[in-house]
Length: 432
Image (cartoon, rainbow, N blue to C red; front, side, top):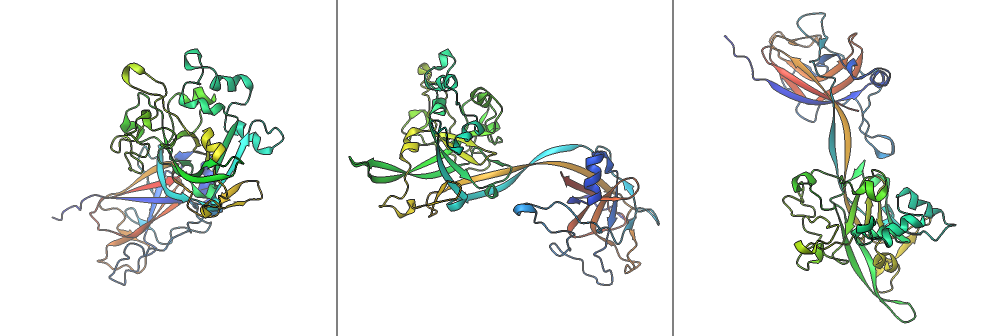
């Protein structure tokens, strides 16, 4: 007797057809009830199978505004179908639980942002006739006097923030560093930002700058009861601080710098520790978190932050007054500080010396549809080039409704050869 081949699992990303997009909006995710397997890319007259990278696609990848296209045009289908057992049956139900939807985080990757992709502007609460002043509200920073007073003059023992790293959120002037939308994904990774900016080091009695240096800022989260290995998997501050600081849930991380104050005010420590230690900056790289309050008995000193990173807006808001009041522009001794003004009233550095390094992610909703081709199934085909001794060469799978209407199509990266006794599992992923 022959041996039954080992089970193989093939993961395929499927794209929704126009009908599939319409039905998922008007119906629900349980419409993906059946599947069809095809071999439209197989010419059995040749003995060679198509290797990885040589299967023709059904759609391009480019989306609107440089995004990713997940759709397929009308008129695309499976030209040559395999029969489940024998003609004319080509439809088979998907496995149970295929209607479950899960969230998956996809890493977009690292970007070094500079030049016109990284613009700056200083906003001030006192500039009541300036349009950019609206952004204090956009960023949920305190505007009204009682709220500002809570940050500037009231300490934590009395319900305020003046003795914490967050006191600077009440400052009147804020420097915004704005990252262009096409430089990051759905959310900037709040534990992986590195920013370099030029700062004047001194002035003549007449106010002319006499020197410039570089401040380096990093992003991190506040200290909490969260384990470091849990922090490794977070992309934003998930503690209770966003709610208490801003009055709503907001996607932020916090900017810190050795040039302002080292971690725990300890000269032997650095905020750069653990930077770019992927994927475990906290548990393996020993990345520092922010001490929110001083606890003298345990040797914990309150840290200082330089600002807030708004991870979905792509805005780095610097609140530290040393930086805001001394940001270097067009310093005669450093050509890299030369700036160019935009029509919006922002400016950017003409050189790429002063830049920001960011990572970003995208949260996808994924439906995993499991399609099983058992031994004895899908060994016969509509393909008129197949010979009596040929094993089928699978290159596509279509997800359908119960009537056989094609709702999504996915293609393999190579021919999947299925012998009659093979057991093949197709895990078809639809990203919504």
